[in-house]
Length: 175
Image 1 (tube, rainbow, N blue to C red):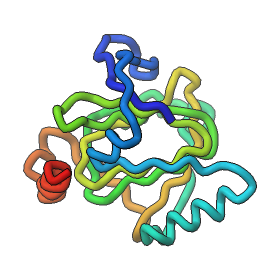
Image 2 (cartoon, one colour):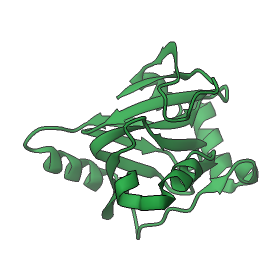
Image 3 (cartoon, rainbow, N blue to C red):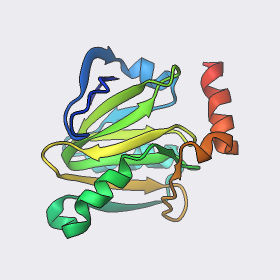
Image 4 (cartoon, helix red, strand yellow):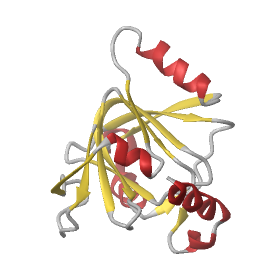
C-alpha cells in the first residue's frame, strides 16, 4: 500500500496521479481509514482474526476486469469512481491485481491509496471515497461485511446531510 495526495490532472482515472506528497498510515488513521498488510502461509488466519475482532460475519469475492465483466466493465469502473459514501464500513482484502481507493482528507483533498495483493483496507462509514482499477485493469478482492452483503452508494452531494456522514465528521474532528 502506498498513499499520497492525488494530483488532480486530467489524465485517465486509472493512471497513478501522484502529486509527490506522501500520506502515512497514521495520517490515514486520522481520517478513519485502517490498514493491515496480510500475507504469507497464515494469511487467512490473520484475516479471520481481524474479521472476528471487527465483527465481520460475511464475505464474498469480486473480480473487476474486462474479462470478468465483459462489455459493462468501462461503465462499472466509471460508476465506482463517482464520489460516494456508504452507511457501513467498506472492507476490502486484495487477493490479486491492483487498484486505487481515493478518500477525502480533512481538508477535502483526495488522498489516493494504491492497493495490491495482501492489502486489507477499511474505509469508515460516512467517508467520501471512490475506487478505480489501475492501468492493468484487473483487481480481485474479498469484500467483508458485518451483516448480509450490502453495497449501497450514496453519491455526493446527496449524502452531505446523511446522518452517517454527520457522525463520521464528528469522529474525525475529535481526532
